[in-house]
Image 1 (cartoon, rainbow, N blue to C red):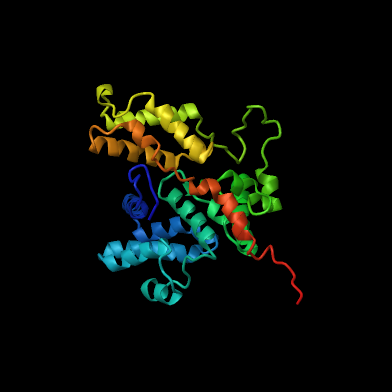
Image 2 (image 1 turned 90 degrees about the vertical axis):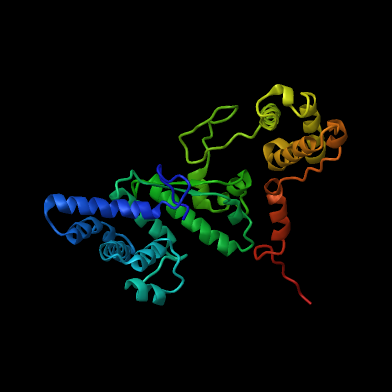
Length: 327
């Protein structure tokens, strides 16, 4: 449901992609004077070369049949299968006549099939974004982490070796998720060798051609500009309506620095939230002195900034730190 295209940037683009494929097949069949089914079979033959491709092609063909017969239930069932929403094979077989479903075991193969299909539908390819990868870092079971890392390695090999065209990935995570040699990607030797950074990229030098791109943290100067822009939004862009003077911004940052440390600009989510709430109080309570409120603002450390410490503490009870006890 999160699939997006240029014309459907907010998600829910899968139906339009399938409709585009069906429409192109109908137009091609009309121009060639052949049955639509033969054109669809011809185009989908390429998918059947991949793992799970036969069922994938059968589901896409079922969607076309639903369009031809005006069967909205069949179309909805096909889209439901493509989204991986069937929980049992029996239910999918009754609805679509296929023997398999998309589940945890074959989700990557289904993504590869989806990438091949969107190319058949006229798109350049498929780009998949995996956010919050730090959740793998937080897994307590070493076996579960390694199983996930094996899938990441499989994806990385396909992309770096050019095994599958028109298919790309972006993984978003914290530095600890990448570099921790105990729980992060670097704990898996095959991934560490592939994701290691350029040894010459030091002293401010960067290499953007590698698989790892480091996002620079906000500097205090950047955060000051951000707070100033938020203040301008509250004032509707009119400086005369600013809720706080310029000196309030450094004072607020100093307060954050005392309570959170340098994490207040490295992971500024809670800092920004507190500043918005601070301005909201001033806006809704005219006459309130900003200086009297700054000292009462409670800034909690961002949860992700302390994820490594929490994971290490929890990991002591995990399966990789067991101790032998003799009674």
